Each structure stands twice: as C-alpha cells, then as structure tokens.
Length: 171
Image (tube, rainbow, N blue to C red; front, side, top):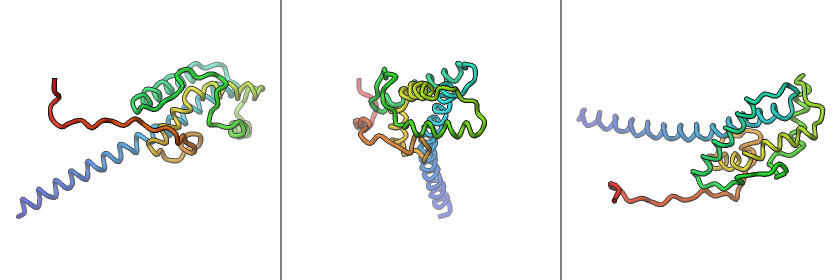
C-alpha cells in the first residue's frame, strides 16, 4: 500500500512539474516578445532621435531583432511584408512618439533638432518589425507593455498544423 501510494504521489508530482514547466515555458515565450519589443523600440529611438554620434550597434540590434521575429513568424505562418517601405503605416501614432520625445527631453536626454526627420527615421525602423511584433504578442497573449501588447492585429490567424499519426515515420 505504501509503495503504491508513493508511486502515485511521484507520478502526480511529475505530471504537475511537466504542466508547470509548460506553463512557465509559454510565459517565458510571451515575455520574449514584450521584452524584445521594448529593446527594438529603444534601439530605434536611440538610432533615430537621440543626439549622439551614430552607433551601429543599435542598428545591428534592430536588424537582428526584426530578422529573428520574422523567422518566428514564418514558423507560425504569420504573414508580413518582406520588404516594407519607409512610408508604410505603423501602429505607433506620431503623438505617442512626440510624448516619448518630450519625456526624454524633460529627463535631460539630448535630442536631434528636427523632430519630423526623427519621426520618419523611427517609423522607418519600426516598419520592419511592427506587424510581426504585434502579431506574435497577440498570439502568445503577452503581458501588457506599451507599444507591443497594448495593441494588436486581430486579423492574423496562425496556420494550423496537421495531426500526425502515432508511431514511427513511414518511408
């Protein structure tokens, strides 16, 4: 009786651990898009708006980030524009961008003089990852974060996977 009870408890713990592990894995996956969006937006603002000498590290960060997001979107079958143009619309409004610039200026961050040019440069970076970031944040039900999971694209549906039969693969 004790051996059976011990086996049952161990099995229950193993199942619970697997479930908790899966839930934690999904949570970490959704946090990836929230944090990734924050990093990409910060790098885009630094590259476009902050008055510092050009730093290619921010630009490399943006490029590698949007390429990684696109590969994940490809896996889930999420469509996106492969070659977006500089003037394509983004989910961030100009007023939201201006609000960030005002907050940065109030904090003493040196900003570039031409805010219109900064907006165009920021939008030019953001257009590369905007659709993909919002779709992946919505797909994973990412926790609330400004500019990523606080808005969404409701028309995108991921592809459905076909059920595979159990057993070894057939040649």
